[in-house]
Length: 119
Image (cartoon, rainbow, N blue to C red; front, top):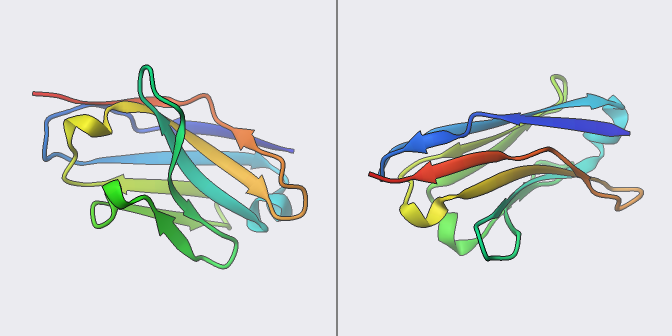
């Protein structure tokens, strides 16, 4: 079992930066051997995977955020971060931390944190 709590969302002007953090609690070994990701969901749209990092540290990003967002993880602290730079209004959404253990494929979710990019 893994519990996830996100923080770091807020209101920022276009071009600004935010850093999202996700703290996991529960099984450290489950967290270590899992894919961690950040999803987002804007009003009226489907939830989409924005960035992910697997248990080997390999990262993936959707094209819309490449070069602007950076995902990271610290297995010792059981945290997942998302550094978001050069934010755009279209990045406005609720952002959710996700952990998917390699051996089960079950999804664990945080409660979400709102990011609003507006002048």
